[in-house]
Length: 360
Image (cartoon, rainbow, N blue to C red):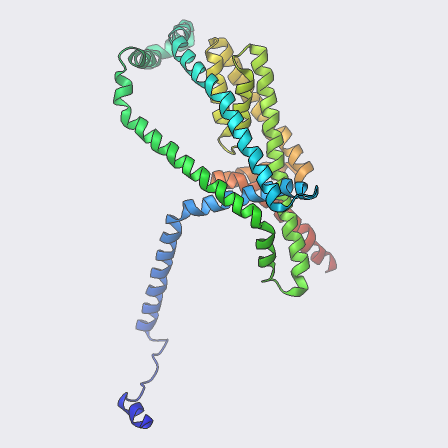
């Protein structure tokens, strides 16, 4: 009976020759189509991958603080909750300290803008540029529309809605990163130990030690960034007190937060400081802008290499080059990961590659 059933299906033919051009063309087209679909799927999920990378980076950066609290007898969950409670308290303090001066200084800037524009017109170089390009005239026209009948604001309503959508999207992304960071930091040891099970037992201990050393270097990098941000805030506090700027402590807090943002943080901080200084006078605005630019250059080429060399054992030239390359390749994410990746590569070279080359 089974033999009869086998005969009903017929006799299998010869297998398709893989050398056949039609077979090769079909397999090649199928592979190309699969690659295109995979690349499109990855491209559509790029933002998700960026969020995951940033959350994992923040988790590894917070891990040294968590381990420090654990050494004092706290459980990992309690240590994580304590740190996040401190971060939440800082955010509340920042909002309470910064928002009122920002609103008042924004109104003061709009109020003093006509006087500033008149001061600019008295400068011979700027007056000549105004004759050629009408820059001051355009600014005066825009300011007049904003302060008189509000037609510019009404016409820009669509832009305001767009800004509102951007703010909501940014808030949602920030909340997602915060939640992922919380999950990552709580389960970081378990996830690392689970990953180590894929490593052969004979090499597991060494690979585990290197992995935790890399995580520690990421934490050292985050700590170094916080130190640099506090240095920038102290500089701005001294500058604000010297120039008599309003709410110097609030300005320093703004710069502290902005300095933690790689790639664009100092641009935002410098713009805010300059605009607040302009509410006092044109001269103060120019002084604040020039001194901020000078400080950023000193920080980038003097302070940052020295701090990174002490914290991560990375040469100053490597710090600058890796930051430039990472920023040009991956933008914000590259700026975040460039120096820790360089430090990790140096660690692997020193512990794995160089010992092997010394034996040969």
